[in-house]
Image (tube, rainbow, N blue to C red; front, side):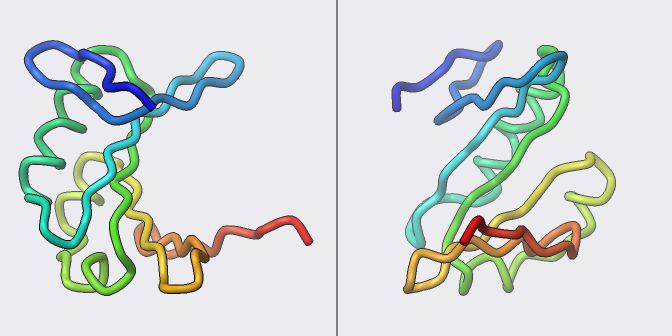
Length: 97
């Protein structure tokens, strides 16, 4: 993936569908989560219909959901087996079998 410029920030990736565009920001366990939230807020301000922060499941459980609720952001956590968990909003992602 290559970085995508959005205003004064860059995001890690984009997922597009018919009539919608989602910005993705991926943060490792040593990255700055707050900076990632700023990057996603910039994407929302520049026309993205939704945004998601992706980090380790352990990191995602430490984040307070308030900012995700207010800005309509999605928080995804990836466990040690590579399984993606939707941490906020609290819905499960169904993986194809």
